Length: 185
Image (cartoon, rainbow, N blue to C red; front, top):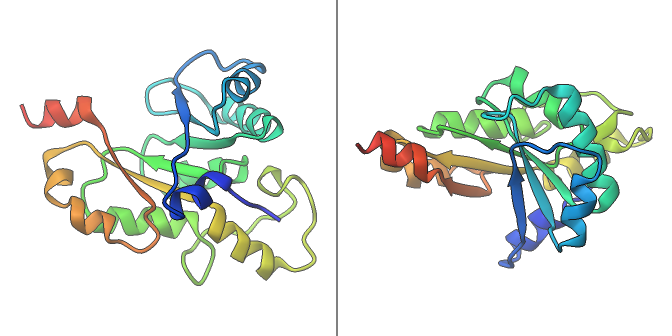
């Protein structure tokens, strides 16, 4: 069954260590990070230009190395999030989060019903290509596993931060200091 030890640790009030990767998407990246003690890697799509094939491979490498793959997608759209989850990511980071409505959309695309509206596809990378005789049990486990990160990077996002972070299903608020500094002048 799908699990995310980083999300479990954070929800229990613990600390998890990892890094964000913008380049150097080699087969050895995940093993090097795991050997250095990383528990997760955030794979960037917003600024790196990494496509779905690169993300699929890196998610497989990360899961094989025992670290949690998280992906920063370019935007909070279903077509940006769904393929990344199907590729095996255990977390989604969305940039430029400015409203609770956007935060609700993030949760909707990351969770199966009744918590969200994630599309159903089984026997893919996200479930290690295993068939699931009990789809509901798998969906419940996946809802508990996927980590959601709202990046607060604008003046509007900062103004709405409490409301964004109060959305049920948002796990982390991440301050994007470069874009926030730019937005604030």
